[in-house]
Picture (cartoon, rainbow, N blue to C red):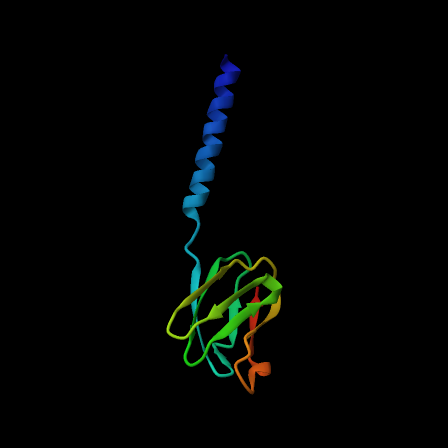
Length: 117
């Protein structure tokens, strides 16, 4: 009987520790990114590995897209709306993000860099 109580107490402590870990998680870092024909602003974004981030994407002129292939995330960017692209970088390095919706001459050069440390 005594061992049963220890097991139950241990399980309860583990559950409380897990709940505390969930409560201790920070809100994601929010970074505003605007687009206009053939430019992301900012075009360089520094992130930390394991830190949740939300990119708030806006388009100043036409419909565009943001694709970050190395993290498997993408979003349309609709003029007049704020689109939210959430992810957590799981590897360090330098990565390219790009517009994946044809937006006219100059589209092929519309890209930026993520640096994850």
